[in-house]
Image (cartoon, rainbow over all chains, first blue to last red; front, side, top):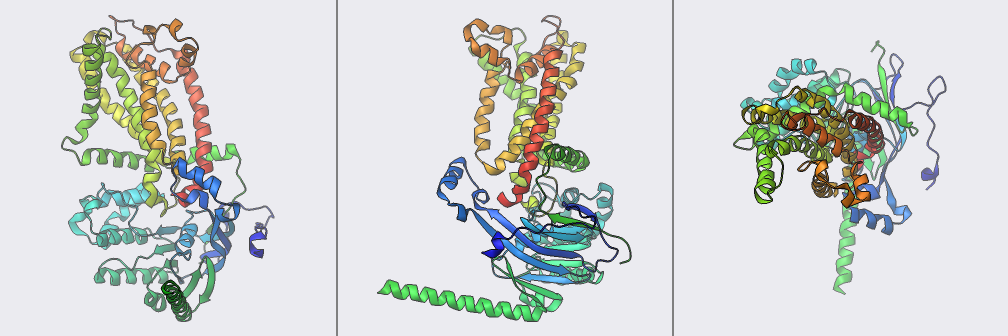
Length: 292
Length: 289
């Protein structure tokens, strides 16, 4: 485990001082929207469970030191250039959503760094953060306030968001009366209407009806064309091949491959097939053992 | 892309200094006051949404609570002084604000789990909004208070009532500090809500809400009488009683300015400490929730 023992790299700005999280000056055209270097996220297992005091005591006494932490991401390095859309694919639990959360600034890296140029808009698992009792309209304004967008600006964007979401009279009804498709549509409209330089999307394309799917794909294409960066986590391998310029395969928090979408998708298919065959063989072996 | 852009760098930072973190927390509270306002409005909408009487409950709640205590103390135990309903009401109003704020604040962060995992924003506004929502319920409660006073206790209407906002401001500071700490701790220990309910009830009875401090015989309680004075709700309840209840037929008095001032200073230190605790724990929220 050499990588675990390595000291985190000290990042220096041109003046030679260590840099903290925050806003720093950038070259006029750095040639990328997102620059991720040697990123690592460690979870402390004692904290991640929803604990009661009893559970906390049990965790403190029963888990040995080595088992206490877990790297959800490790040594992740990549760049997203202007106009590029990167598909992040991988099996469940590979760290895909964690990666999006770090890029959105929600999680702090345990090591390494991320530089993001411009405004980020992140709606991860779209629509889940809505306030059930408030109307769609109020939720749009509330989402804007959460994202730190000026109230007046958000009101200007309101008609556009409502129009794109296309949920008719429901816009003034409480969110709890919405179907999951309507919720996803509203979430997508908010995320993409705020004019982000960098858009981070988690599994958006799985929800919504066929018409909205086409509409949202068009919107994503437009954003990508307008020299913005997009990172999206998707299980839709077809979408990754068809519409993303690049793909990255994550497994167990490590980057396995990165590059041309069709090649990466092919590799992912191959590896998941192999994993499935291995699993089935294992099950067969255990069944055979049980039969004896 | 010819224009100069800013880069947002996300990385682990060296453990920031305490003063720095407190400053950051207070700046976040101030710069996101718009979000706080929306959250308070959302809270009001929710309170009125699913009940037949809707927001009328803001007014009915304290009145019914008062009725219960009056029945219990005046009717059954034959205790309580003159105009006891007003005496109780002037304590129930601020306490309702305090207890709802604490209870709301405890779940303020954990109940916003989904949005915390989606959008980066300073979570410190959540307990602040919970405290502020309590202020709204307090202001609504002033309506039946003044109604009662005008119709039944007109002789107790004095200019001292104008001191209510000052006492309330001190209470706000004290409440805010507790709300910040509890909201952060509940992320890690979800039992806090259960504990708080009982603790708050005990605290209410240990404070001079239903009785006046002067009705207690200090000789009877020994060292406990000294500890009693450390309870922040002693000066708060006494001040509310003084400015609301103590009219000309009672014992007209201004609040005890010295203890209120002491409590304010104490609360400011508490807020600084609470902000520090909150900011230290905040980075772990998204991982734990």
